[in-house]
Length: 377
Image (tube, rainbow, N blue to C red; front, side, top):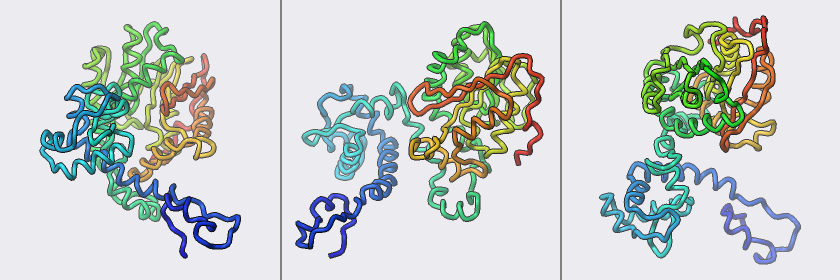
């Protein structure tokens, strides 16, 4: 009899139960393969639930997350104006994924859904989920991208169109990481730091410093169409009056040498390739005063990639959709920082799976950055 590819049959399809001679060899389970296959559908189940308003509708009913499920599928279907039969299949899938509670045919929010998947969740990812993988057609053409060495339709052709919803979706998480990082970076102890935030997106790092230091000021840079997000977020957090906004490419935008106490490169280096990342680090070096600090936040792949699966996947998302983007290894970043002249490197994890290197420019250094003349394109 041919071997079965279904993971649940492995326990029963053993020689002693199948009437075959016993051997000490048992095929490995196929569960890892099925987990990957199911991942495609799982993503779309979650996107559909967000698009239909499943989590927000359950939240609006006022039920306590983690309490007894109270809503049956037909009742929720009437509120959402969808097919009850189809909605029930979707709700069961969400329960299987651990994103809803189900008991006795009734459904309710669990703690994870309330925190991450409702519009008012404490750490809402509702707007991030649909855009986080990048354009889905680029994943479908990943084999062609690997053959050709670049995606057929890179987001570089319309960066603002991709990055604007992405930075809006990641802002809450990044602000939490930047705020918590103060426990180790201690920018709140600085009197009046001047901050340069290159490729700032929604400017979570600049906002964290400005809120911690009432006398701090910031120069915030990003592309036209993206920097508008930073204008809005800084206004919402009451710090816009201490910000100067400089639209443009972070490789070429004008920067005063030696004029900043803190420079931030937040989740931009993995989009640029090695040469581009080193050029940005060189620009950060030139911008900093002696004893100034660079904060380089990103997803850094561990020496053995399987130790950091989230970082590997985030890097792959860039490779699938950008011309220069790749996963970046922690060891690479350390080399880049040291080659540029930075010292006292520290790797922080202010919140889970959010990492940042902090590096210092030596006091009274006259050294020039060795990568300052590198071509990035």
